[in-house]
Image 1: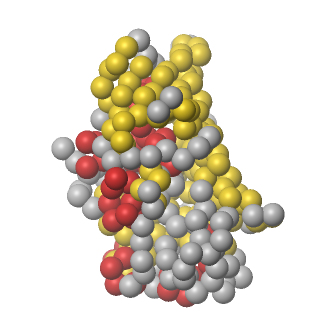
Image 2: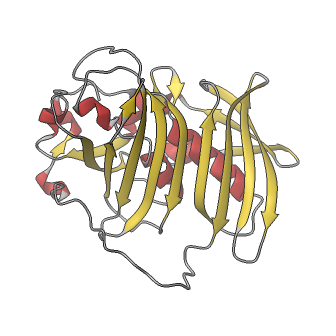
Length: 269
């Protein structure tokens, strides 16, 4: 079993109630990563909906989660012909840690028109032209060690905090070779360092709200993530992200609101 599957495993504890064991390998400091938590609650919702694939999911993080046991309660809002919607709350020690709302459908049965003027960012060379994370010499949180990364050569300049634009990107895949799926896209959308690091010296940037729109099932291999922040006002920022699969297809977009905390050290991802 791959690490991600083991650490997102669910055990039924009642009607639409599940238990998960939050693993220490998916943390930033002592706090489990938000994308990791999204993957867990989406897995729980999917147990109760007839449609197989998340289309859109929004999570509000109410208070930090912690390593260890967690309970997820699912409420089915509506089951329709093409889409189904559910709510979920993840709690620990009797306190809600996050609340989520998601709509599921079937991404293998598209029946509408396409309009796709966007393309993968020109700034991103192919993986073989990029640097493995270990070659950058940058410190990373524990969760980043679960992935194999390839950063563009200019990434070292990005993390000097003197860029004009808050943007960054890299290729990503699981370190242990786990295949990509929609749950991995939820994880990847919150696995990257905050792009605001490229324009200012900051510390922890906890997510307040995260929304992911799933566009398609990813092809095997690398996924290219590209993220940018346009505004940071009063310590609060927005972050927009794109995930492109190895065939150049857009497979997910994300937006999150986060809060910037004081600087804890330079040269960190």
